[in-house]
Image (cartoon, rainbow, N blue to C red):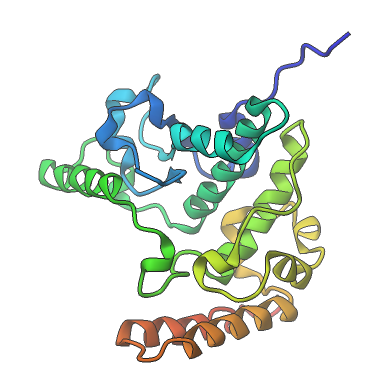
Length: 262
């Protein structure tokens, strides 16, 4: 007899791997078209909960919000998979997308404005306009001056930790690879090389909150691989801008300073 046990919801999965931050998860199919990011699989910007408050049921006060573009994910699954139940592929892809956005949430300190139940009307309008502009023309990372901005070595490391944790709680098979494509962000190394450089750290530090990983020094092999990629990215730019030079310097020093004892 087939099991009638239901799979954990996305909300329960998010709470299990990031209990430090309360989250709303909203699907693009449930909101007006102007708030659906064209071409993007998901979004986790600041203050989205206030902009989309009317569509959050039930409202439980201020929280970070992950907007899952289920429409784009559905189109991607239809185009990419020819055999097998597409609902399984879609749920799997949705969880991988969710984990990506959760890592973004974990990396950001909570601002005072993210706790206020009422935003300044001018500010709230600006946030809404920014969201609609992004949704109308979501640009790929590769087109940005610094293509890996927001997806640097610290992000990659935390993502692999989050991927390990979600595989423990999802109650279904999830792939070990395919969580991050460095080349999408102009980084020459492969996902498996980053994973190998990180070693067994995700398992060893499974009890460390995702929000605290940055205070722990990563394996030297991982830090070196990241710095080599940053250098290769910079070397490939013929005439780097000041912004790119600044990003290069920050990237090289990312894993340089840690409290004594780590």
